Length: 217
Image (tube, rainbow, N blue to C red; front, top):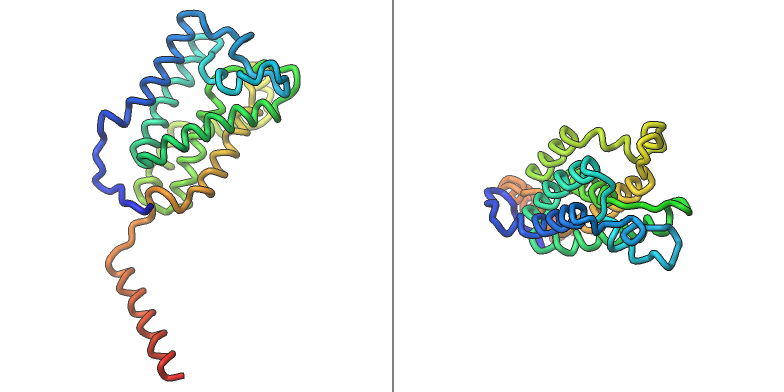
């Protein structure tokens, strides 16, 4: 469904799901319930497949927690604001397929926790959706994401800094790629480029000319 997002107002409902998700993540961490042995994704280990669903809710320390929950709340809120009901479907798909991708493709023997894979998926989706749809509001969001989270791009590569800090760059890359794929798959849904009156008039003129040529033939 095509719809315009110009003059769209922010409502409290925009923040309900992001608040619930981030609150759960914070609760699990400070209640010491997010044990890596239970919540972690262990790639291709069927006994730990539940980690596909639990890993985003577990974090190793307070820095890890803050670095993920703050941008997660912001990006989820943006997605819900601009994509409305479609956003809930997108959030589930990002959450599930990022975890599934990590379970299939991350190195064997690793035990991965954190919401950064989903975070990369959200950032990638919003950025490329703005470029693909050529919608002014979404394109402005793309610029904001580059400004605020541009350094995230280096997190998808196997760099020494990522290894030293025990960062799962593979999960970042999986989330990033999925975000690009979702932005292409859902490019015809949600907000689109606004068409101005003069563009409609040009289309009408072209159709009229085609019709006259058809009559002459």
